Length: 608
Image (cartoon, rainbow, N blue to C red; front, top):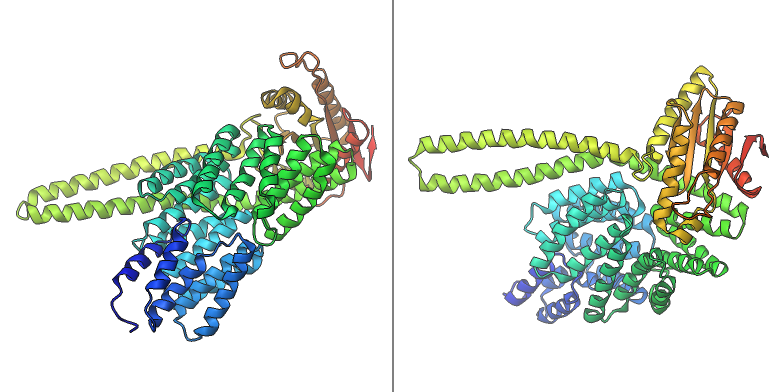
């Protein structure tokens, strides 16, 4: 009975085995497969178990619990099931755990599944495990680890005739590129993948790509494009899904773009409508839901009402270990606590933001070599595919003109020369692109100052030199006072002009040996090597005066911009972060004392 012919089951199973669980018809196909299994057909019953597990909606708290019980019952009912089926079920379990927010437990279980898959030499399961590990690492901001796993999964999927899973691996790579700031590269992937999925009639996957394209548009501040994308996805899900979690998650995403467009009330309307659907226990979107609530209410001037949402978002991001989410939350906390004039909490948030920036900078450092290897290997994979196709064509020609050896030799010679030429052109293009990427990776595009990563690279070198040679060195931490009001009152273009003006003033009044970098939205750091406190204070005070006197009449005749600064000279500090933290402390003292001034840190910060 177990081996009887069941062509319809086998045909439908081949469809679901392609990996497109996002299609709204997937649960219906699983039901059809359940009905097609004959009594006593244990082989097909076991084969279907992992696919049945994937048919549950993991974002829904109830369905997540039911799916978990389904796995427990299956393992108990079939204790001698094949190892391959057991690993598949465990991979499904890891996904359930992941969406319940226990990232550490999910990661540990997937690692074990990967080890088990290697033991039985099942490359398909190895690819699935690498894919899940890459997705988690990408989400938590560990980009080097993410790129390594995702590239491996893509290479393994290529060994099978599974175009959907290959394309989904490319989508995960694109998502990771977006998260680490390579938005142009990500958008190139998205455009190609959306076209592929649309051509194959996989509308649900095309919408998945469209959703992440909207994230990318937000990253490059094209908020209207992002909102339009979200709205089209939202309307699509309203038509095809009876499960409300799909539309609810898109509503949360859309609220972020609407907030950036200052459509705070519309964002709140969407959030209020779908709040009850987003569960704090199983849905990673819960943290972003609370973050958007806080942002929208703060934007409407209901700042006190935003505080409970800050607490919920904090707990959520701590639980799911999302570094990028934490960074967004801490930026908002600084703005909110400053507007409430709660300088202590604003200072604590700023310190926490500094710590998360250090973690993200480390992740960016670690990912650089891996990223370049991924790009090279991706090109190599494409080249290998091209070679296979060319070889096949050559074999067909050889069969047709078997006796024309001279012609074949000429073709082979031409192909060889063409390959050399292509490799040469690729090498030139690759080197140029590498140089461009390096420059982009080290420069803040708006102000043309060194970005956070580049500043810290130079500053760490100068700090080590100062320690070794016992030279003087001073750090100045400063930011623009009430910068949010400039954006709110005059628009983001005006804010950009202010940032560029402040950057130019600093560059014009510092030496070639000094290092200045834009390390946050309106935050700057200035490092003055071989400079004692008196000279540093003099330079800083002059910059403060130059900014306050700058003519911003092209924006508004009444606009006056000021900056506050904290100054700290190397004394007994053993690390650069320790020195910068003291400068930050002095900066907050300057703000607390009325702004448009500097404070010098010496034991405790003092006003000068």
